[in-house]
Length: 365
Figure 1 (tube, one colour):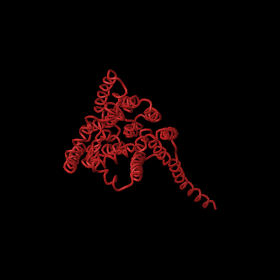
Figure 2: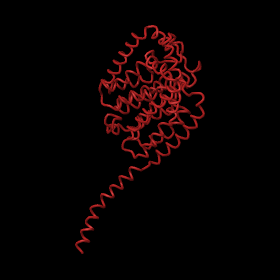
Figure 3: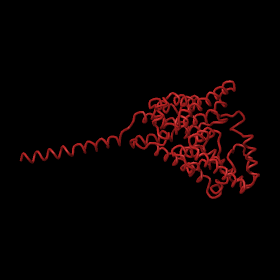
């Protein structure tokens, strides 16, 4: 009997650690970070309020414009809408959708497609977190004001962010640069120029691929669509129309501040970005994201979707500060985007260089 009791106690001692480990794993699986919860709740409430406020004014404004540009390309009137800044190739890619689907179906499909891309990116970046935290991060990202604006307008910033992420999250190679090449050939935006500079330092093969494929795509578009369409596009780029003659909605430094202030601040931004590039791949990447928004001739709120790519590496090297900036992100974009982007740039430079050195290939791990 005594021996039986000893054997039973031995089995309990062997099994108990396994049960404890399983319980710990289950606890981690369900753990919720209160900071992530707070950010998700605030973004969801604030984002819903803003969405309700602007819905009647912004819903599918850019999506409808894309469809009209595709039809204009087909009937030979491309370039008359000076608010459409994308290339004739972009309109040609949209044409099958414009003629093959009801506009409402096309708009909803475009909305869901971009939403799916965003959620897939969040899923990739939140590996290692508990499932509740992953869901909360997704809610926070989707209800982030720039994301809300991009989704509702039918804009392409989420698509641009995805192409940039493919390059940043992969080792240097020719294949990751191809999606960005298509972006450059169809929806080139000045905010991408600092990213290309970053690629020239840290992703040279991807840069060669992006520029080479952009040239190839553009050549095909020029040959197939004709010189007239591209000449009309260049005229639009030379004399663009940005939501009105007063450039309302321009959140870049040059759009919000008088030249006497904007000029020096732009110069400081450029110098700070160059300094960040010298410090390493990840600080350089984040600084280039910020610089693209700050010094671009035109920055809308949806452009700040790109800054979602800065969150994970910042959390890894400056957790408290990164959470603080994330917490105020939506309201900061509404109040004064340059100050928030500038704060991210300053925080990036304030992190010790040794902390960045511990990140392998920047945002890839």
